[in-house]
Length: 122
Image 1 (cartoon, rainbow, N blue to C red):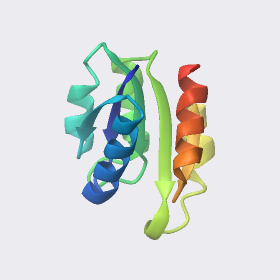
Image 2: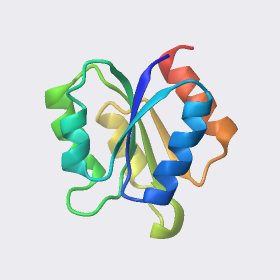
Image 3: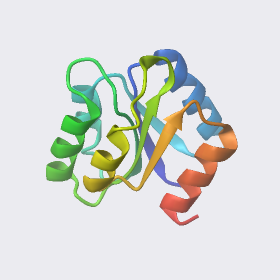
Image 4: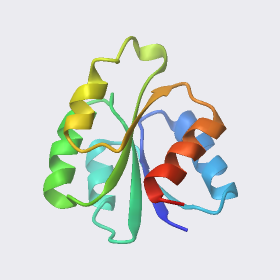
């Protein structure tokens, strides 16, 4: 199974997502901030990034720019929404930067698993 990196500043959400994906057989690496996550993206075994688009400091769009320079082949599922307001405007921009899927929070286990399987070709 692929190694997945989750970059999300919401610890509770990140832990819940990590536990769910580990139960499905994935190896999960976590990044709480953009800088921490980008350092971890250098691991060539990471096959997928789950990226929160709204993070403190540098936002997801800046992370995408840096990531494309570092790992242009990386598959990415962008996530946004929840209590932070309307972020639907981010989807077309993220997609233009090479994101494979855009997930609006909250999403169900079935929705995220379907997106992961689609992106990884499982």
